[in-house]
Length: 313
Image: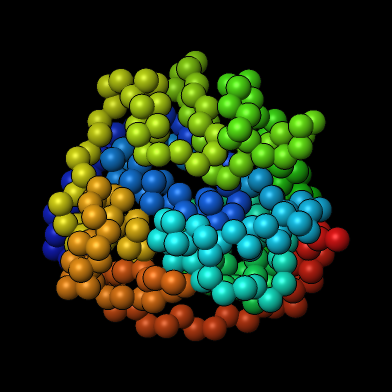
């Protein structure tokens, strides 16, 4: 199709979904955020032929040490994978439950905005905000097009609690194949769980487990085995085409991964054709000038609901 915004021709994939992907993740996980370039590349290659479902792990559930590990490991992952993570120390360990609960609430009550909310929570949190801060969650909601007042009510809804508990149960029930790759799982010997990100792929009666962080080739091979006839769009040849396709600003590392190109060369091209949005230790890029988002205020109901779901000891 043609993008009205940039007049760049972007080939589209409008076929029915061939492969379902269950994506076990957590907004607070820097490993999952560092794997976003791979997820974006899969979206480019296969489009709507992949049906995505996010499952929230809640990595910090009752575990202050895990919250400290997540924050402490972020600077190293930023250097390794180049995503816009702020390497500065966080003010305190943060629970990921409020952010995970918000994603689940969006899934139930605003499903059109679930993916956008998960992305905004990740982007803001990795830029330095705390995942259990009501103001940060309000900002993510506003940027995803969800009213913070409504989320304050949703977070305390029994359906949301039940759905979040089910997500946590599924994340702590890895498949038999995933157990065979125990080094890719997390948790104690008697309570193994999926690490973030982990993928369970399925098509018809066949399935494929890919726990933990994996290279793009692993996902391509799994998809090819599950759906040999699936269409795979070739890699783009310009950064402008990538940004014209994207529904949101993309990081330098994401554009480079989608193009399968050298990150320094991609950065130079982006500097010529796109608007730079500095964040963390790098930046996001857009074809449009984007005015700074207005600072969202967390309504009292949201503040109370977020405070009630912080579970760190």
